[in-house]
Image: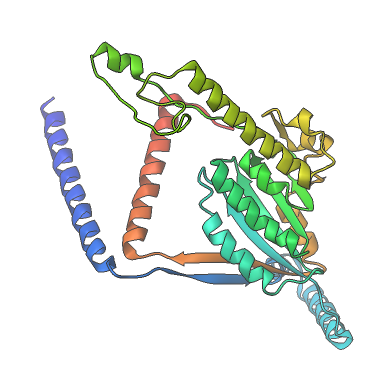
Length: 339
């Protein structure tokens, strides 16, 4: 017991020192970061070179010298022939969207789309690798509007879903002329949900008054602290139904082949079932699709990266570390797996 007490004291002192150092570092970074303006840079990588490098690495490990020489000779001959003919391959611009509840990736997506539309032609293609379980209505509405710019420019848009495109994620996906899904990706959830706690009875029990003053009959319908009324609930539900109707009409506009009333129930389907319901057009992973396209087109991966200040990088690193710690702690505590 004495050893444990000493160890606990040592641990407490260590944690205190570490926290103090972090506080000082954050304060220093905050002072240095004042007055600095962020910016961004568009990063472009040719995916054909990446696939070619993978193939060469495998060839050097598997083929003998004569086979390698023959392969290189054949490849060189094909490249010379293509230059002589002067054939111009179509271009495929690959974008990524990893959506959180606020669809914050839209900040970068809009710049990437602006860059693509300054160069892309109708014979080219935009491929969006989409990953999102949905989130705020207005945030995903904006993200979808950004993708609609591609359609309006008459540039083909293909959306690839490897894991999930549900709710606001599917709202984005449906804009693509072609939707490609992995067999076990999750799709659908064409519905609207809103929930909030109400602690009015708890406050009343402890003689705590809470007043909400509004101007306008429906300025506030449901509230967390005040007493909710049946009239307020009805209005709130009416607003949800209106939003759901707009959602359904939006999806039906871009996917007219859907039986919208049958699939707009808030349900989700795996890729295999989603294909039968025409939520997607083809079952294939994004890797398979891009590898196939690389044989006949030039693939360019675009990523707009914001230049973060040192303060932002420190804050982001700390946030990621805390999230990982919390997730590891929760998984050990519950011993559950999530799918």
